[in-house]
Length: 108
Image 1 (cartoon, rainbow, N blue to C red):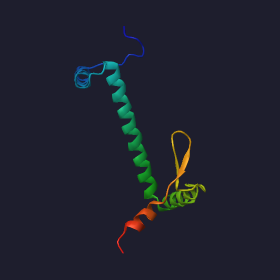
Image 2: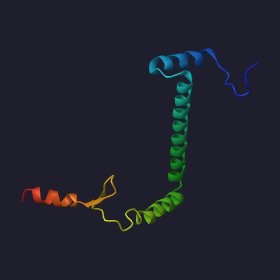
Image 3: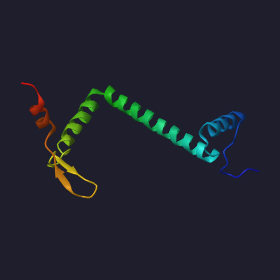
Image 4: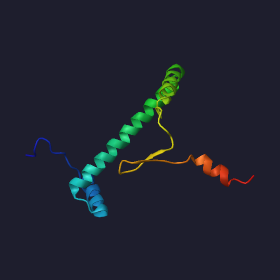
């Protein structure tokens, strides 16, 4: 008798698993885990896309969502200097805005 958490197998599952193991060099357990993670990710984003499509199909709900996004845009920089560049060692350097460099090199 198989353990209670055993996953039933079929010839097709065995064949696919053998192919994945052969292609990737993963162990069967690693191949199953990677496949399940990919499937979960695919389902997550498919359902998220469906939710956004449903939201967009309702003009009132979509307008409310867009208004909320716009309200939260105000906190994106939250008063930070856009020219600050923080380095891995924790120091900060102030860089010139990119527009300044282009303005000097642009022909007049």
